[in-house]
Image 1 (cartoon, rainbow, N blue to C red):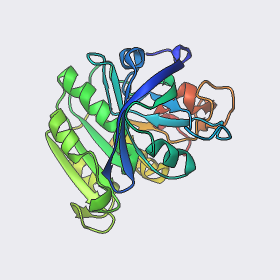
Image 2 (tube, one colour):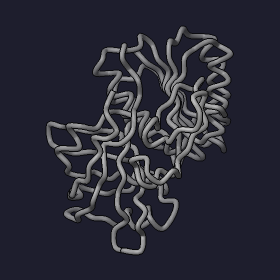
Image 3 (cartoon, rainbow, N blue to C red):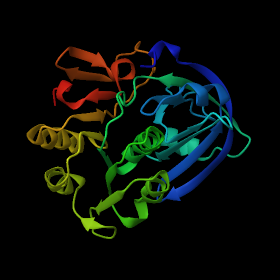
Image 4 (cartoon, rainbow, N blue to C red):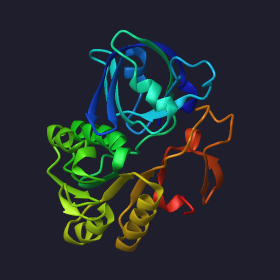
Length: 263
């Protein structure tokens, strides 16, 4: 398990920063030391460029880290001024990154047949998990949800990783089945012998996933979304209530056993 205290500041350069779906960007940075150290499910925090008054870093999960060429890739949604400014970074720009931070997906021992579940931009750490599962020789399926076809990202990436089956749901029915990922999850658990579910998305989605997995007696890990302001446990803005008491997601998470979280 990576040690959260290994997080450090990296001054990195931008390789590319492109739109991949409506309101969603792919940022690739050249960060050789970070690419070597970061594990699937961990996160990094970027300074907001171009505005010294924006002192709060933006925590972002990642989808791919390649030690072979020293790059780290993240997909993020533009939801406010901080991410809007990050979306304006271009090739060759420099940015400060804190990482790797937190604890990621627990994949030791490697599961035999897991199911990945993602909602919205929660697909980013799920794709990182898919890459780790492929490298470990696991067979896995996925369910991904999006608002519309225009905001869908991750389907092709999961196929390229080697996923056996991907089911897509959308709020308006323009991509895959109309409905929520949790509409598909329950029958999927009944039809297949999955030994682990990995989930990331809106908290209501993950709460429902936790309940469905608990009823089906299938272990579930969830990556909790919190505003992890400092990234090393000092500010207390990312508290998660668990069976062990209140803990900070940036140090104890962001990935938790679903049964540990007091929803």
